[in-house]
Figure 1 (cartoon, helix red, strand yellow):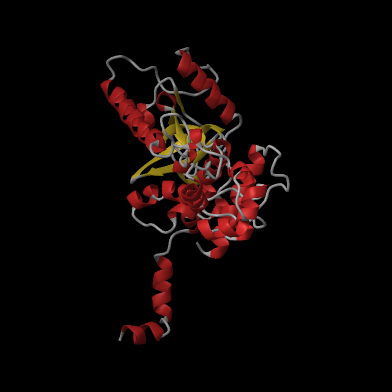
Figure 2 (figure 1 turned 120 degrees about the horizontal axis):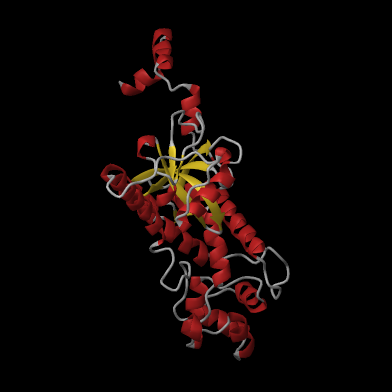
Length: 338
């Protein structure tokens, strides 16, 4: 019966009723999350943050590598203090008075930026935000040319509690680095045994034995072993395990710390969020998917002629070379539907 009903054309009155309940075009565009509307992260942009079911609005103060410094934005302008920037109206896509609270500014990973909501309008906003943040950090009087709230008093419990709540919320997003970097500051994917590991090229060049015997013992193809020996490809996790079993020594990981950092920088971009979060709907599952996604990219074998940033393995690759390498790898995965 349902299939039969679905096959019937909708009556004109039904279409008119549906149209009357549709979102206004401006609101529909605001909620759009297509990659096409996601610019590069830059100061004075308003973003919706999202991490493990928590959300907040924040304005970008500074961007560097895979992190960004932000300050929370709320419509509770009555709670503003002398270090809260109050832009002219209307200044954001929210079309209501807002305050940007510098006392609660913090540094968060860029992959928590989930939805671009437009720029904070006004001339010199980026410079004003930087100046006011500097005054806040040094506990100096705010610049007279910048519009802010009244001075915070020690017994102003309402505003003090509001600031505590904002600071606690921003610490939540700051903590989103847990599990992505370790205590030494190295990004996910570091091989604990790398200090004692042998480079795969040195291993294959120096250890005796015929190619046929090595193919039979490791299960790797002759072309794969040749590519590993010449350095045209990095060893995957499976390659390293097969060589370790045969030679009895650990083999160095497939990617350097520099390469892993470049990967994190690329994946942290908001335009890449859908690549690692799309298969999941539950908020907890989405954020749990980030580290496995990074690890899968690091461990996936790479064909020698599939993605190369240079044809010279011995040349030190720049960060931009490595970022481009990972962008191409992610694009290939998307094209393959994986």
